[in-house]
Figure 1 (cartoon, rainbow, N blue to C red):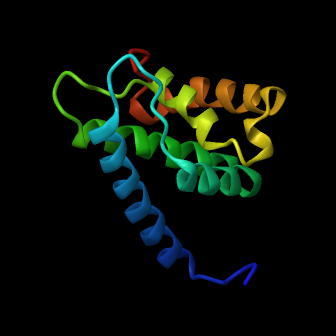
Figure 2 (figure 1 turned 180 degrees about the vertical axis):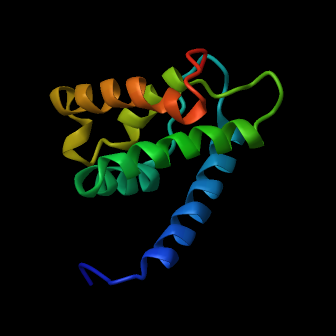
Length: 123
């Protein structure tokens, strides 16, 4: 099955649950100062979102960062920079994992994710 129609609200619920689970996993396995790889399933979903709706891909990435921070252990906070570095590993099966393609992803996330946190630059 290559595609499946899903009502938008149902898709949003599924995406939210997926992000919560990925954030929980990330929070428990991330070590501060290391890249924070969100995993191949997140990379696959992110790449699909990026190709269909970049704003949604950015919002999903920001939600993952927020969820990983919410569920994280004190003193082991996932930083934006570390999650962006880890995302590249998660995109290894996608064209977005290629250096020239990933540059746009990295630039976009660096510029736009802080807006989801009230413009904070200390992410």
